[in-house]
Amino acid sequence: MGISEAISQVEKLLGDRLSRNAAVREQHAKGEAHIPGATPDAVAFPETTAEVSEIARICNVEGCPIVAWGAGTSLEGHLSAIRGGISLDFQRMKKVLEVHPGDLDVVVQPGITRKELNSELRDTGLFFPVDPGADATIGGMAATRASGTCAVRYGTMREAVLALEVVLADGRVIRTGTRARKSASGYDLTRLFVGSEGTLGIITEITLRLAGVPEAQAAATCAFPELEGAVNTVMETMQIGLPMARIELVDEAQIHASNIHSGLGLPEVPHLFVEFHGTERGVEEQVALFGEIASGNGGKDFAWAREQEDRNRLWSVRHDAYWAARTAWPGHESYITDICVPISRLAEVVLSAKDAMAEKGFTGPLVGHAGDGNFHLQIMLPPDDPTAEDRASKLASTLVDQALAAGGTATGEHGIGLGKMKHMASEHGDAWAVMATIKKSLDPGNILNPGKVVVVN
Ligand SMILES: Cc1cc2nc3c(=O)[nH]c(=O)nc-3n(C[C@H](O)[C@H](O)[C@H](O)COP(=O)(O)OP(=O)(O)OC[C@H]3O[C@@H](n4cnc5c(N)ncnc54)[C@H](O)[C@@H]3O)c2cc1C
Image (cartoon, rainbow, N blue to C red; front, side, top):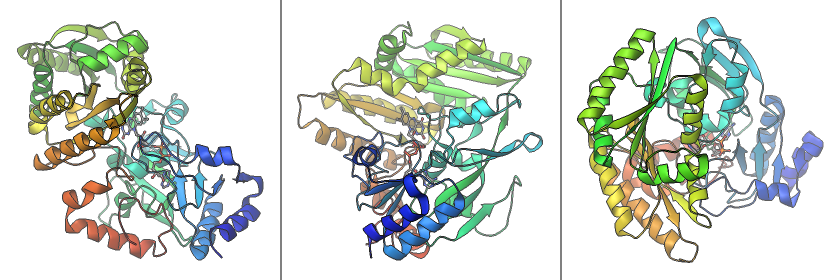
């Protein structure tokens, strides 16, 4: 009985696709989080939904934890196998199962990454617009309700996921949602599983909404003498309803890091990175309107990227922001925060976060999917300061308190994992207990990613 019995049975099912190798287990102990990892007892590499279902059935009987594993890029300790058990790695389930160009949707297995999917779609005139900085898997992105630079226009995984196939803790396989664009049919289980971080079910198939590649696209960087001018530009742009495809806030510390890491070559002042999608005429109109708002807030030095290659370069610099900071502050660990507030409160919260970081004696970049009211401080932890992590954690908690007081949330996109558990009660009140009730009902044995999102025992 127990974990070792479950592993033996799963080994019979998968053969050498079940690994007890120490190095493989160690690789599955943590994602990109600053939080220490915890090693699973084995790593399984399923190839079919039927195998996932059988693994769940065995683990449920034996009380063996299962931690689903995508690309391992999550940032809050989601993947730590704190009670041991099996890490379920989806690298062998990464097929595109169906493409429906006429309906603008696609059905995929969970292990395909967002870049792999877009590469498969390149001849269809369609693209999948949710783009976290890392090349995450679609399963992991659905499970964390991820977003990215395009969310301001195209939405997050909440909007992108139309339907799911999910293996429940007892091995039952269910389907939630359909390919229809809307439905009033019963409880919205799709959105219950999106963002559930592998605690309610294991996602084995995802139907995604796609977008058409727009006729015209233009991207630009725009410099501001002060952060305040950049943030006010974001707020005014969103408040007049300009349909921005992307509007990213990048402070002077991030520009410094990206100059070093990516040879960006921009003046080290706050910037907005923006992009417009539409018809040729529509894009020209949006550009002109945005230019007026930005100039009114001190914006200048627009550098345009109209060719695909130049736009790709600009956005890969933005996607590499995290790694750029690691390069620019060698030897430092980093502690990344992720709050999201209503747009009208963005300026006060951003400016106060920068002040708080300086007051605590830290440095590091601030970047954000600012059009959504979402931003991150990447607090750099000096290697010779043993108190740094604890102080950074307190600073991060202060930022969350400010976000909640402003009507916002403790996490705009990275999720709860272990790192944000301490804020669940203050953000959700009694609703957190309701989440635990749902967890107990779907996973009474608490085998699915136990210890994350909710406390049940
Ligand atoms: C440099 C960098 C930049 C980032 N930028 C962004 C960003 O812009 N926006 C953003 O949202 N996030 C961002 N992230 C965080 C991270 O990329 C996202 O959380 C991403 O969605 C995680 O996907 P993954 O495939 O790596 O999942 P993993 O990290 O492997 O897993 C994440 C969670 O999902 C669960 N899970 C994985 N697969 C399944 C499945 N099939 N069924 C059920 N549960 C599953 C896991 O158990 C875990 O709880 C960034 C991370 C890094 C390192």
